[in-house]
Length: 367
Image (cartoon, rainbow, N blue to C red; front, top):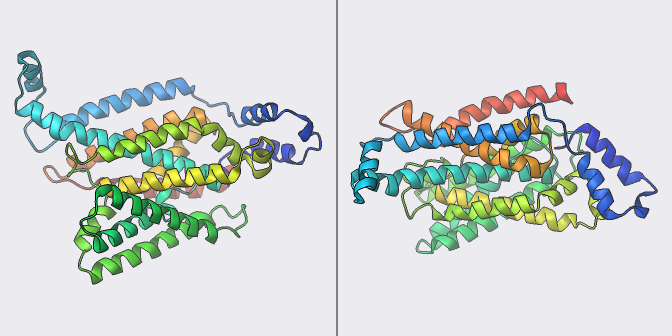
């Protein structure tokens, strides 16, 4: 199932086979192709983004207020008035704000990475954890930690990124011969493929007695995020900005190989750039907070149903909704067994599984 509507795909096919196409200007073809990817959303995009931004702001305030340690906003106001630090301001600067920023950056990165994967593979039901990216990153991180335990964090991130790219390449080779009409086979193969990599990783950890270390990367958790331990996630923010800059190229690549060729866009280069961005986002998130599944699957599908499939228009909403979803799951995880915490990966795994099954059951009726 393509990321784009059947009407856009029909028009794309007509553009590919039209004999008069070479006489048209590439920019005219591009504007015509992009114009047909716009779907009339039931809700205006600005309204969706405004509501998402307000919702995220409220969740940020709630996230800053919830925690085991004693905290009061009155203490923050007294600290600002007296220009002196106290326990409340120190807690806010050292723990609460870094944790909230890490949650936002993680949600934005994984949601945007899922959107890129759906465009590159032309399938709505894929995300980094379903193509072996996060599992391969965890495997690479485990191997480099065993062989070079004193290596710098950037070295570990680089090895995890290379492993994620290798895992995604192997997955794309596996699905190369699958017909585009069998859109449900791709995520199923991805789940099996990721399970195999995760089993290999668990076996290595069991043999080397590093299961506890591996569990830190397999379950996304923000309880250990403090100032100085999350700054690597800002790199994912820069990659999301890059994704917005090349959004139109990704959209054209998703329309078909011939259209991209006629517009002078190298499908191979754009695809490799997208794969590299997804791999780096996945590696950074795994290194910093661990794996969090289903964000890149659920959030882009929800936004696509509300706003249509034009990537440049939908990416801000995808980022905002991804951040809000992770914030909400983190708040739920901190509240349901207070003062203990349930990892975000567990909470979102339950919610994401239900939504994923709903999308699978709903898709044939919509097609």
